Length: 97
Image (cartoon, rainbow, N blue to C red; front, side):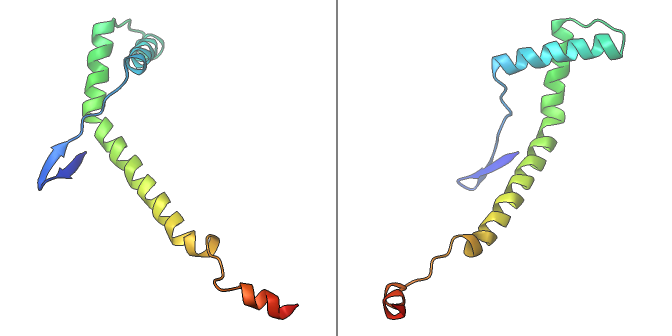
């Protein structure tokens, strides 16, 4: 995840809100308890979350951005067919009457 700024690449860090982070930590703890039969505390769950966000997060983020770009590019291509008005139609309407 990088953005170009003044000819240099600037890294964008994935930032989670405190509430989201707390919910994810609780989810990791529950997952470990139910699927791995191991109780983990807040610290271990937090470290695992940090690893996932740093290591896996960028791949998911980049894929989401690529999909959003494709979606919007498809919508832009479709603009001509759905957002077009015939120009100079006033006189054509008058002449038909």
